[in-house]
Length: 207
Image 1 (cartoon, one colour):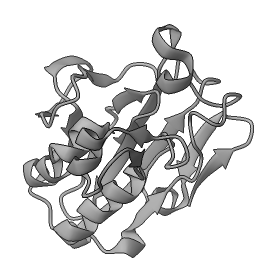
Image 2 (cartoon, one colour):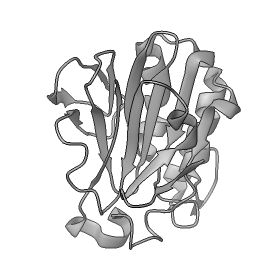
Image 3 (tube, helix red, strand yellow):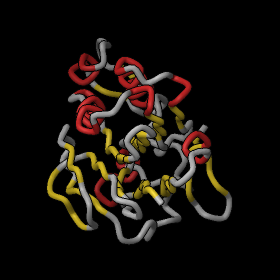
Image 4 (cartoon, one colour):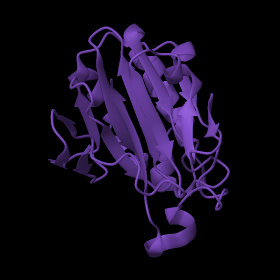
């Protein structure tokens, strides 16, 4: 389960919270300056991944991997899904920005490949994003997810399905149930607020 931690304005995963030496969180509209100094990327809705060892903007990509203790890796979202990944085997973490283009373009698979991780060693938290209640897409996008016509897509389920197909056991995947478009009091949403929207950071680090 991924749920709100009272008083901090952060969503956290029970699954990742049980792991020693890991700090993580999914930001909300109430945590605009969290986590502070971090490694980030210029997000371009791609399947590009960067391996980083220092803070700052590491070029154009949509996922970051690090083995550097103390270094936050962070992505920003406002309806797209943030995924935080821990590899217990090699002591590394990753943050993924997963919009529909990235998910359809295999950003999750590319990240796991670049981590050179054994899937059964991975623990993954899928943070708050737009829910199937609000993510209506046209026929062209729907076809990328095996659907036809204008319909709603469950992007979090698509992420989970891809992880399971890679060999990550379902019990090692946690998901938020919150919808960023529905819950205006907690989240920014591009679909709801359009060009005036802000972004929320989600981040993870080894300690």
